[in-house]
Image (cartoon, rainbow, N blue to C red; front, top):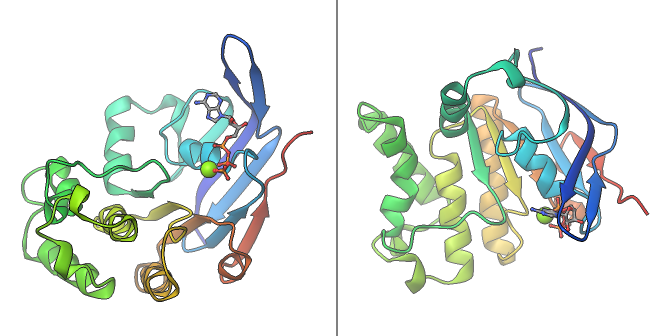
Length: 223
Ligand SMILES: Nc1ncnc2c1ncn2[C@@H]1O[C@H](COP(=O)(O)OP(=O)(O)OP(=O)(O)O)[C@@H](O)[C@H]1O
Ligand SMILES: [Mg+2]
């Protein structure tokens, strides 16, 4: 089994004028390709911060991180940016859609970043199958401000997985959804895991959802 994530954090500190917050103290995580991991813990425990670190959005912490076999502190910025677009799919709490673009173009944005040649027939097929799986065809020509919160959440999810990334990082992806749509998202997530051996890391407050993963990691807030 291929180890794709080998992370050991000594400490992550957020500093501001008045405060200093220390989280993820002596936190270690190893993940093999194809694992489904749920991260749970109370608000403020550091779940989103951890996803930011795993997804290379935050490299400002004390620790070591080897991703896909390469130490990330020695890799160059353009390589890491390429990984963020092509190998890692983000469905984050603060992921925003671009309001001036219709939903279809928002979802296809990662193709654009990847450059020409990535918009071939295969990509269109992936797009179509995701659109069908989470039933968002009716909003494709709408702009984000014309969509409901749940519709936007599904569009953000579609954009996060459109590149068929090796790792999907999802921060409460189903929080704003009704039961039916929650099930569609979870089913698609797990189908990608099965078909493409995609590694899934999901932050969730929903224990039933957490239990459907291979492993649950509890983050504690330091008192
Ligand atoms: N950019 C920041 N600057 C300062 N402090 C921050 C920043 N981001 C997060 N924090 C603090 O770090 C701690 C962990 O935040 P984080 O967002 O990772 O928690 P969380 O577990 O995702 O919580 P929630 O369940 O509410 O989303 C919190 O105390 C938060 O206030
Ligand atoms: Mg959070």
